[in-house]
Image (cartoon, rainbow, N blue to C red; front, side):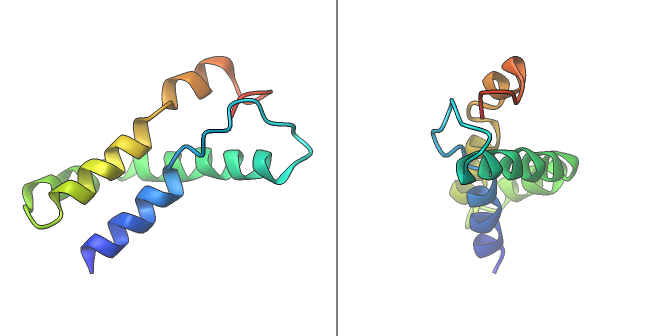
Length: 84
């Protein structure tokens, strides 16, 4: 069950590849939700990191961390105006 939870978390924080998004589109809302999801996961990051100790879910936990921090710096460096 932990693996399924991790997959859901990983999908919620994954970067969808949209970098320049029109604020009047659904893609913009998706980007904003990803930022909120990332904030929630970062607050509980130690729980995801603890999953690294379990060999059965290690690859999934690593994927979650990759999704969480993939392109995180770019989106927050430029702000949410035009970049997701």
